[in-house]
Length: 356
Image 1 (spheres, rainbow, N blue to C red):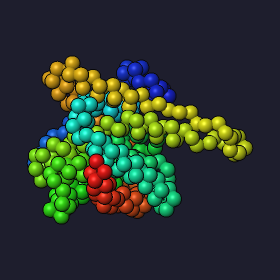
Image 2: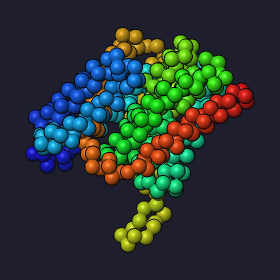
Image 3: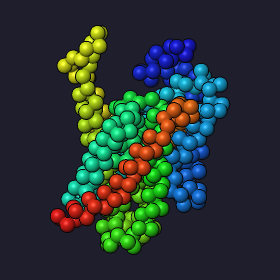
Image 4: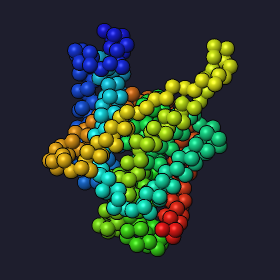
């Protein structure tokens, strides 16, 4: 039965008939609900830990203890959560953003985000591939998470990059470590930066990894800083869709090889991440104010659950041994990008503000 399930993984509808499928979804659901409960606790709020981060940690603990013994009975549902529920979560994430919010930070905020995203991702490729000699998938994922919105961006890029589960987990762990560090560092730096609360908010929103960490770093200074930081961060999140399309085009440029190992001029097939396009559509619908606020709130709650389930499934499919094999290089790349976001990001903010 499991062979049939695995063979039809690309078409999840028939799998609904299999008890094994629902067993995996049930396991992922339990982990997700526990993660959401922990995320609401005081200590998690103090540390800025999101449900996504907690879910992948709990999933990894389960994935390296008891899950291998029940994998044959739960693998189909876990893989469905890691893939299909992830895409659904990315689409629904669009209902958290409006085009009006983006307009609120003005052209200065837009240019700052564009420059920071482009330079950070370019640096990730340069350092990761050329200097550290990392595998392409891990470097791309760490660059994506550092450039846009941490773990959520990494999960959204995974279907495009087609990386193995342990590489995704390594990338998530890297951005979580340095994103958490930035959450504590930025408020300490605020008195030394010479920025207004509004400018500080743009700095935080354009350089800190996770949304939860942006909220914490901004709120530690003032409400004005927090509100500006969140809007600026949402602008970065909005760039996720065009970024994924561009990433797909970038990956498709690689030349194929024929049966004799010789390079050909045939480009790889371009994969259009339709879930990213639908993300923008959802944002547009939300911007029109045609969806009742109660419905939007319900969609956001459901979206959080979907993304948390996807992270839990990722953790279940991650093996500690594979992470150990990745070595120190992912952390080095994350550290270099972190320093660039703090120092280079500050310089970008000052330069754009001076020009504007």
